[in-house]
Image (cartoon, rainbow, N blue to C red; front, side, top):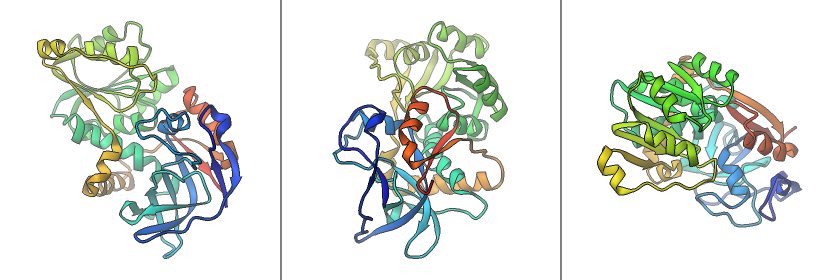
Length: 317
């Protein structure tokens, strides 16, 4: 089968097309003929072995696929851990989910990791209460575009999106943000306060880290929470316990794959998200579909913020 294989860590050039044996499923596993593989920002960290979960070489990257079960012919989407950038992939039975007939493969993939992340940011990590203000950084990205749409229905009073360009901010507003601001770190704290009528914000979903985290933390209201769900800048932050105490603020970490330890957290949320998409309440944004051999270019475009929404690989192209 055709697959993208890494034999070393490094830049996009380490993503090379290879011919590999088709994997054989073991007990409790499902073999899937991949129609589309999803790309995630985390994949770019895996490529350099700087992700939360360390990788082992050689590696076929890619944590999610949509396609057809070889045993039943059913259309499914699945969390595979790795091995997704290929014509065939193996997934644990409990992490394989039927795709509703009304959704295409791209929509299902946009919902699986990004949608589950957005849903759990509200419900599990921040526990957003009715009427609270919520800041969604990268509001036109894969997670952000879904988090913006879910905001009001999951309790947010005011949804404030940030994005790096006027076009992306316009998209965030179209998707339901009440305000969209420039995401650059300079003067970000004041822009966040201005966007919330001069008041501190209740909740921030931060995928960037670094200076964006610091400005967002400083803009929190008393009892405000900032949820760290990514560190795109790869810049670490420090928060002093005295600051937490003086301002009654919280810093929360969220890593979606910890939800896999509690399968109900995945199945219940995914069922809700699929139902919303079928009803037309949740719009998925597909930012581009790349041939398998252009996985390196997809990583470049993703890292350089040239895209919006979800990126896909087509193993057959």
